[in-house]
Amino acid sequence: MLIATWNVNSIKSRLDLLVRWLQEARPDVVCLQEIKCVDDAFPRAEIEALGYNVAVHGQKTYNGVGVLSRAPIEDVLIGLPGDDADEQARFLEVVVSTDAGAVRIGGLYLPNGNPAPGPKYDYKLGWMERLRAHAEARLSLEEPFILAGDYNVIPARADAKRPDSWVDDALFLPQTRAAWRRLLALGFTEALRATDEADGVYTFWDYQAGAWQKNNGIRIDHLLLSPQAADRLLAVRVDKHVRSWERPSDHVPVVIELAA
Image (cartoon, rainbow, N blue to C red):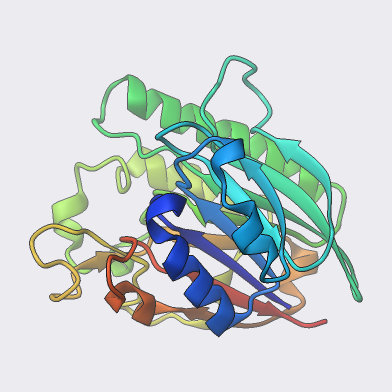
């Protein structure tokens, strides 16, 4: 079973790339971020034509998340619990049924938080605490559970080509990394680092200053696995080549393989 996460940076601008990658990679489930459209504007017909079911939590111009699944989508949760006043479309959780049983998947687009300090950073830290509380409740169900998405968190110096240039950024501040560690400490396995400890593995390259050509990247797209999901982890890959396609997203897909 292949489960992926990809910040497409506008579904309208990257639909051709998404279709191309879906046909190439053939994932079973994909969590999308920054679709940047309302629900009704999502290109359901084009995606469904490839054999996927679709769940969307959209927002005009900004944010927005979606889940594509070859298996039926059930038990949909729209929005991260904990703040009824939060109108930003950043979280969508579903259950998909497989031959090996049901898998619960939360797709997320965690706030950037810049500039920090400030209200945007306070929102980021508050959102991370809400995510931790929700994740703790889900882990108590003792089922395969995956939190996949753009976390806007650089976990360690090894996850940036030039870590010193990020020391004052909300993605790398000590409070951000501490909140990340509190989430992991609940019992999650971070999929890529469970299989690959190498430096130089990135998922994002800025459009500015030739970052892609210089491989000046960071790793901010992650999949966290409950113990029941981690027991089934077979492999992880980063589809870095997608960044070289014409008019790409600044992120690339990350794909895990779970045993059936």
